[in-house]
Length: 113
Image (tube, rainbow, N blue to C red):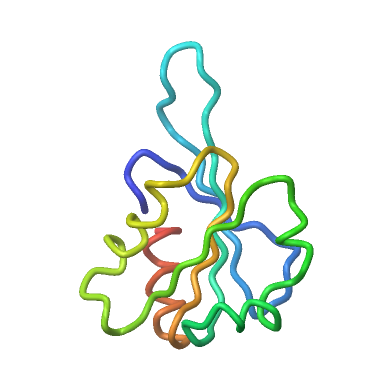
């Protein structure tokens, strides 16, 4: 779990992808809770891989898509995710290309447990 956010799995993308919506748990008074979307895909850390891993519909959403890579060389997966998430705005989408299924599983546990 990421501090300050609740996580909910979103269905609708192909089975090889995991989509999670993160919603702020404690917004400032008078503000609406911000949310971010995180999509996990198993694939190489190569921007060209996006064309065959991620459906076009993700990029046709109204909000910017940020892309990062996560792998076994990352000593702390949560910290590696924070590096991308902290520069995002409300409603943005983060796509993380994960080195293998083990990384996808570890990151999904971080997000959903």
